[in-house]
Image (cartoon, rainbow, N blue to C red; front, top):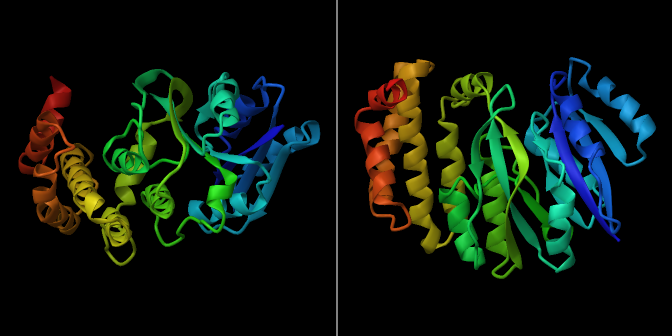
Length: 320
């Protein structure tokens, strides 16, 4: 019998937490899988946790831990400390699992894989599918690290992956990072293991919910209280732990993010002139690595360099 723990941190999630837990308790499980559902209430003030009480009463495998608000990384660490499963999956509370999730992951877990990378769909606020992301086959830990950094079908996300719990021993999320903290978590993990049994699943198993509100919050949250560009902080931290083979990939991704933010800000108009200047400086410092990174297609290089040089092109492209 295998036990899988799903860790879901939440803060003021009254509008979506029922959808999230319903996607879990209504799963039909294979006979050899037990499910543990671990919610971590990160100091909610809207009564979100009260909506989980009927589920705790009805289902013996639903657990809710309430802590003082310290951010998603700390909440995930609390979840890891309390998870009792042989395997661990993560979920963001505004997202949800598709009905065949556990049946689809059960076979590779039985086959002894240490890490699964799953397909997912991006849906809008009306839960209409906007995009399907299917990871290609990955042959090595090195390839997985490169794909996590550069390829959003794999991504540095933790919510489209399943981990053998034993490889997460003494491995925690960094609480001082607040953007791409899950990418750092994954890269740091893979730097510890030169060989893991990795399986990519091309079935769509997870729904990532994207909406305009979250996009607006992202632009308002790009800089910390000291004026530091948070993406630069995280990617510089990643560059401190990666080897030479990944250094250029990390700088290249930082350029792509920075140029995309510059282009998106033409429409959002959320950044101050000083903040735009800071993002442009980061893009300028990393454009060389982007242009000379052999893992990036010519088409993508042209697109993001144009966004950097002429940010308004992204707005025009959306209009036509």
